[in-house]
Image (cartoon, rainbow, N blue to C red; front, side, top):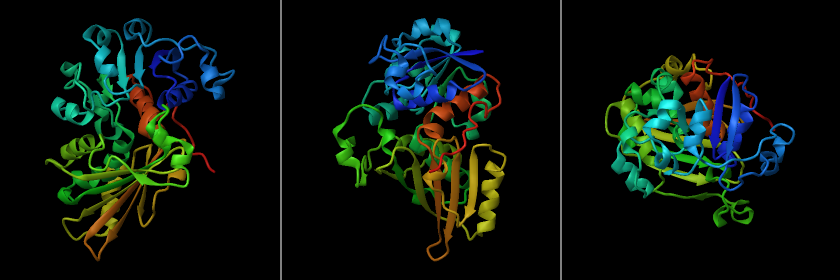
Length: 346
């Protein structure tokens, strides 16, 4: 059995890790870390875990945890993992970090967008960006995995094949994204109160959202050129889900069938990516509670543009599910182990 520790187990992403790993037949959770609920029964924080988890919450002592766990998931705010990780810890255990600490390869870019000093820049180059469908071979050899962000996972996967094949003009790419409120985390914030969110929809982080450089960097690797794009996120009054709509100029006249073939060549054998094809539009309700990413597209012949669309559950494929997918790769397990989650409806 793989012994897993979760630091940040009482946040939304951490709780989703507990939900998935508690039914993973190759994993035993040995540490439910939570700075806010130390020594309190985990099931008293999340009552859905009553008679399922009987352990108490523990602290965030990564050094002690490294002695007990084969893998540590850090579902924590930016800066936390980088402030604690060191060579001794990495020599004893694997780390899958759900924060942004090791996603961006340029430390100056990280510090500019996140407004904090990076405490472990020596590990940035080693860390593998954990987008499984893109970096599978590297992930298998990694001891430090940078689990991608939720917006970035959906945004990158939706455009990646066409960016890689040079089908779209990257200088024209615009990404419009919408997320449920769980993406903002469990902490109390006025902007996320029921009366602020219900019957409302709003843009936020316009031109400044911190996932922007992550998307630009990864699509830059795909296209082989520096990418600068507009990314605008919106908050919508639902619990889960991300829908991205991406617009770009096509670089040549191409048919819908040819676009479909490109997507299928990249994703046709992927368990967790479902290519819907031309004229079929993803919806968040069809991926809720699952590790699937649904992708569709529509060519606009009138304007010479393509509209690409993607949908994921931000807490599963956008966080915990992808982290487990990464863990499975690192430990040589079947990639879909523990992730056979049928989307919930209604």
